Image (cartoon, rainbow over all chains, first blue to last red; front, side, top):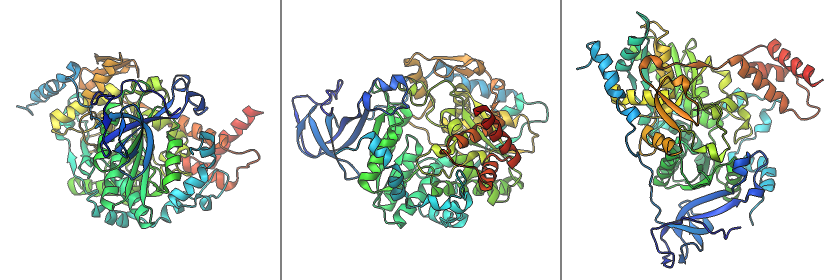
Length: 118
Length: 472
């Protein structure tokens, strides 16, 4: 179960490269397979496993996609498949949403009519 | 050796007891009743003590800002002479950027006092960052367990930002895919580490919010020489409403109306992988507030100290599009980029102000920091990517998970009242359903259920008899 092969592992490193010890990485592992899930889980969720992803410092050198051990910021040792090296924070804002872009000028125009805004 | 789901769930009571250090059993006074006030009082945190703890980490004493331009905008759509003054308690000024620092401060302080080496919190929201921030200052280890991404690996942008914030404060963040078994992982971590359960629902977490209600009462008195007429809290698990209302009462604001406001996400399933990223709000929504108001003891502690139904005078919902709209208005008319989720109560305040005289005061009792991921743009870009129809129009036409309709003008904002009587009946039904075979309700239980629902013993008895008649 723990040897699940993950698709879309990080593109930050070549799979063949050995990742050095103490590198900040992410591991993934399956906590519950679909047939182990809680009874109250709805059908769509039950079709997929409960997956865990945790970041930490690599305890010993391994290749991307191999079983790895990390030491987390809380000092715990956790094992899982090495999935990302120096994982990025990729969340952001994205493009402006046209449906929001004009709200400011609309409400300012209302207050301008009241003589409140320049 | 990893414990199975069933094995860990069977150890739940023991793990809980060890991780909170509170013997909840000693507060039980009936088969459903427990001594709520004594559970809270025994912690020893009155308002002054809580404030002293919070002052050490710069929690609290946040500004109360009068939203003069938004008030003026509300008056342009209100009947002549109507439009209460709207004030905002800028809780984003707390160390980690939300009122959750108040909750985390007493939890982490208590964990340190009791000699725990670290704290664990199960939360995908601002509370994780708050616990991580407080733990950093206290020199305790911290683990945050989040429900963070769907089966495609797509992270909810707001939760991705909380992941970053928690990691910035030095916490270990366990990110999980969708499912209520987060609780199983949480219990495994508590069992393995022996850390403190910094649950959102401990007495400490609720007592930490009392300072908010207390503070805002005094600030309104200073600025307007009266008590607030209405205080509105964004409502999810119930802590915000409970703690704030208790603080108001302790400050003497006994006639202030306490309003709970949630984003309407009816139809979206909380445990559905498919629905997970189709919710453009991660908190303050009915997916939490309905189940927690009608049965608070579904929480990650044996007895939830957040019991919102005891304190709310009114419960309203607004739509996602209305909250995004008011979030834009707050930024562009008041120069405050906050929310979006925390602005749920602001959307409701904008509507409710229109029904009150101009000398009345409505307080929106929190804000939260805004940033990458925690922003209307991030949410609406993801919504569009998932095929949700985002458009301007009448927000009443929106359907959670299918469309988000952003008002075309301020007069289109409305609130929908939740039928509190229905909520009370649902609560009592849950209480009866929780009974084990052979359990009999005593006088203490009837009085407890009446206090929980702010009704009478007679009211509770009627519903119980009705249920029994149906069973027969």
